[in-house]
Length: 384
Image 1 (tube, rainbow, N blue to C red):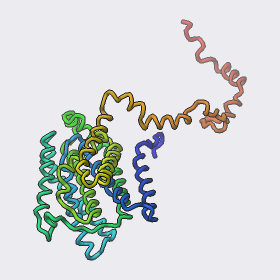
Image 2 (cartoon, rainbow, N blue to C red):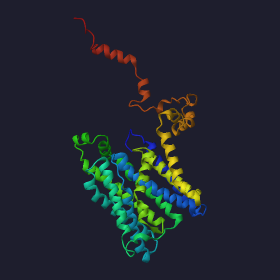
Image 3 (spheres, rainbow, N blue to C red):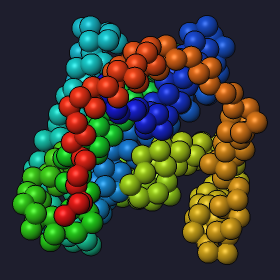
Image 4 (cartoon, one colour):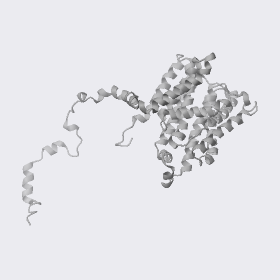
């Protein structure tokens, strides 16, 4: 660490929370104290966080509207799932099979990001949204019309299922890796170039920033982690169907990013976890004839959250009751002046260039005599 620079611990809170959750739930899972439903919920949360954080790089920090994120996830799920299914026949559900499938799924999605990004990222606003949305629908249609021997067609692709006790741990580790890559990118000079493009693209060009290059970098990294999320989805389910990756899912991922706050990684994580929990809980509670109310209740909850976060009438309430104020109240005793202790004031603990005993032992009489012998250099000034 460079001298004079302090660590900003607030930048590492999300790492600490996810790492602690991984350790705690991992120990509970290995020891058999974690329910199977909770394990599956954590798998879905890790996938949602991967998708939301990766899309936040394009939408929140680059400022471009992309609606084809489910298409990249679909590419990773099918290609990575196919590799996993082939390798599992000879190697089983080994860690090598898992890693190779993740690499293949992420690389294929990133390659699609390059192919689509080169022409599409020269567009802006609604036009880019339409192109990326069309890409997602094209990918879904291609896999739906494949043969049963290749990618399963309408019946879907059968993929191996990884151990529930371990898969959510792998998913949370992938989330930590995605956070490390994306957050370090944003805080680097390249990240500042990306945010400069978001703020004012014309000014960024005038300052010499290669706009197309940085747009493509953000798009590739986002697509790569979307492909990783797709492979994670294939390991979490026994069958992959193209209908799961429609434009509705892309919009749901976009809702996670917007609900958490544009350009907020921590907000995207919390929103993805909340929305996944709501969907899973509503699907569990509202069964039978009440299943038709699932989307209605889900939409109403989202509307309430959006109104709470943005209504001007609730601004005072939000500022008074939030996590920051709660943390300040809990830590108020640390800043209480009555709890501050005086310094011990021990002279030998004060770092100085000259030892304190040398300063205190100066003979003033000798100094005066030397001055009188040499003469006062300032004497006589101003006598003109």
